[in-house]
Length: 326
Image 1 (cartoon, rainbow, N blue to C red):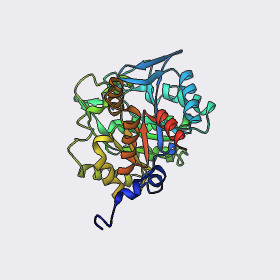
Image 2: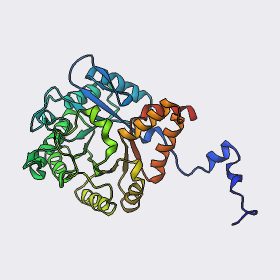
Image 3: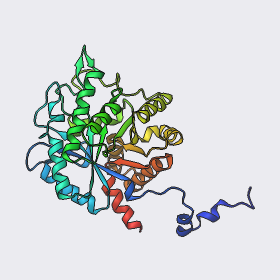
Image 4: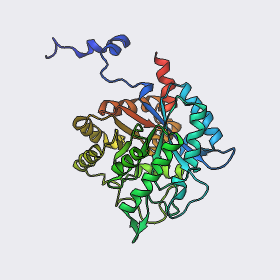
């Protein structure tokens, strides 16, 4: 088909025709909203590098969870800021830890909202790394026991899905085993299967108070240069019975999203991370871009690349705009 017999503009002539032939759709059902739960009372502290996102105490988290549910967003993912940190991250797997108490409060107030919990150690350790330290680095196998205990404690508190983000080898199998052994075989595991050692995480580390006290996370998070390794990571998690696969970050790794979509049939999650969010917010504040349009185009691009679900700090704004399109 060539011009003049083929004129692609015929199919773009007006909004209705464009809607009718649209190939990719972004829906409120595709969105997951991250929230940061902080120990204490009457806390609602805006994160300086993430306008509109807050560290909040549990009573305020519950208020926002109701708002999220009323917007039609199906799920939240929780990160915790505990009262105390120690070398072994004990608040992470304590029955009365910050996330465990937050899960109970949300499920009591908004039982229909799906609650996903981040399973990692970095928010709870005084050194800021994602596991137990041995000889100056995170020790993989001893960390697995703590991650499994953390996931179990979240399930016992009422979490609907657990999402390990630590990047320890073998953690999906360890978590699946402990859940199954304790009667939680119905709880899905959303694996951060492909998580890169990315500079896009900067604002999150302020939000979650999780900056490493020494070194960095490149010995356990992936090299941004690697694509084939992503397939191996995902294959391992599939073999260990993950229920979801995730790529984090999303925007600079759309090719990796597509690779996973083409090679695996599990639901695929893209994490639209803090740095991606903050760049849009900062440029919009300067008047350099139309923030709403860039936000929606970015999220649509992640869907087009293959994401079934998107974890995004834009979720509430996007939900409002999507409702306006109906």
